[in-house]
Image (cartoon, rainbow, N blue to C red; front, side):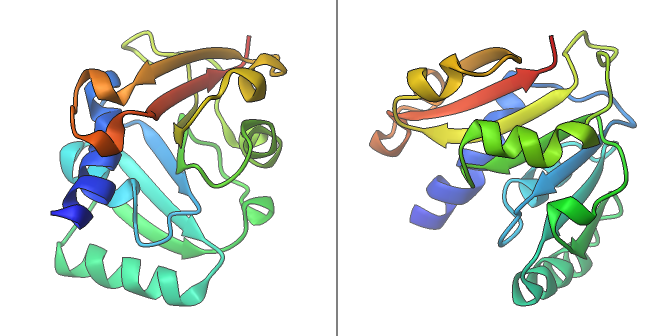
Length: 167
């Protein structure tokens, strides 16, 4: 249950706050074992996901999972954020670094504008703890969603889905 709770449900909490439009493109940066990209690609079969990590062993596992699950809307790539040239509607990640660093690494990769659903294209991070100071210095728009409002297990009490976008 711990794996499902800590990885799958945590990843899918994004889907409780965001409904991605068909055809949207999403970059999962620092995907590790495929989270949150693989659960989201199963949930949103008409959305294109690119799962990126710099560590080859991790990407090989993700490629195998994508192949075994026959996910037609997901692709895995071994590379660093600085090497990515494509543009995406959204970048998703787990708490891989401070939000300002993630914006610095990925901000140029995010399409400007809004989706058809009216959600500003941007960065969607799974983070935990007190984020007030970290987010206060950002010049981007921000909205914090408390995961504990949808999942009541203790693990989620300090977990958040953070949406950041260009003002």
